[in-house]
Image 1 (cartoon, rainbow, N blue to C red):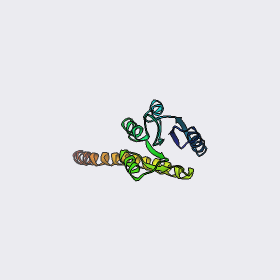
Image 2 (cartoon, rainbow, N blue to C red):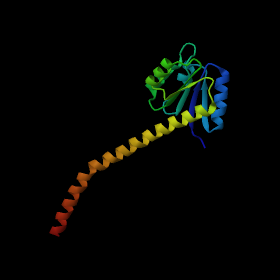
Image 3 (cartoon, rainbow, N blue to C red):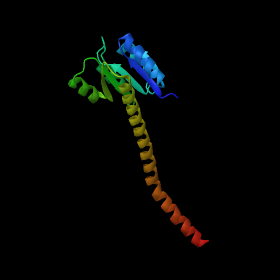
Image 4 (spheres, helix red, strand yellow):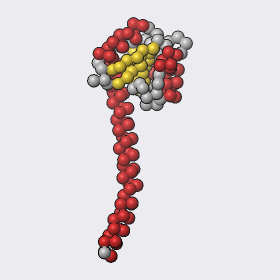
Length: 159
């Protein structure tokens, strides 16, 4: 069963390949990119459920990639990975729209759990929006049904 589509972005081939293999084995379709620029070329809004990106990359870092991806798609779950952790970079990433932050060396299970939580939260938010829309539709239609009931009641009396 396919759990979703993930874009893995890292300038280190070894990190990209092990993440791709692991995530594919647990049910994700994985596309890799070796830079922020490459990721932006491959990123299509709505195609990817999640982006897993390294923070420190040459030319375009993960923070800039996050900001540009957020402009294109606000629903994608963005997971930032870094080998240079700091509280400041974690806070900046979360403020910029990252769902979570993972430090290298990471445990595969941690990445999997954070991805699953992010995708679950995103799907839950979509469901709540759908239910909210239905609720408003019902609220708006209640007066119409009441008026229709009154009119039918009056017509029924005259017949």
